[in-house]
Image (cartoon, rainbow, N blue to C red; front, side, top):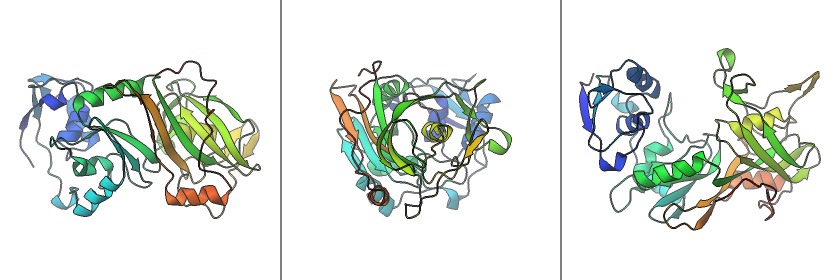
Length: 335
């Protein structure tokens, strides 16, 4: 068991949330345990109790209590192979903002029984200044596509503000099965974390759920069996597109968590099984558009489909591109 530690907040961590700071500087402390230690007042900032969302200032003293040491063989260490691998995923880097095309099957951050993750590989993208880039947002383990990183704490905060507002356009490509009846529309259904037998899922919760809105537009159809759809989540709830697609009666192909029979009134319509598609979730973060916080220029970053999804698109006769007129009717979007 390690003893009490005192760590001084560096200039690059100015404005960072306490819980995220702990995750970054004390990765051996599991997220759940860190939350518990903060609730108990065992984590102190300049000698005072602090909440998880406390914003830190450079020079502050963080007291971390004794915790059980994690077995050495459980600590992820970046290998030369993984360093080259994450470098091969880079699709954009201007010295301020970095973007990678995250593959399917790797988590964005660590957690219970997750040893290999993007956050743990970021050392392989350390810049000339020696500073490791920071995650700006997350993608599900099962989702591939554009993942933004910031090369400084200041840029991470600026990008975080963009992501929290309506000044960014995030386009996801998906194959759903079956195809929806409508060609376009908006799904509005509040979401909350499930409990009991559904504790690992997000659920529609009209009473206590957080508001969630997703725009969709059908790009192509394979009769009623499947559709190639572009989704634009206007809010950023966990598993939002997956839950909303299932709620619409058209779950995303390969979604083992939410592709269950969807009940609407007295009618239950199960997902149609499509053979010969990739054995994965058919959801890909295809592009993001926003205004660069430093230059002010509009930036659109695109991630091409990985080979296994390209094969699925080809199997159904879909072209892996979107029309220029996508979501033209949106009036409240501004960069």
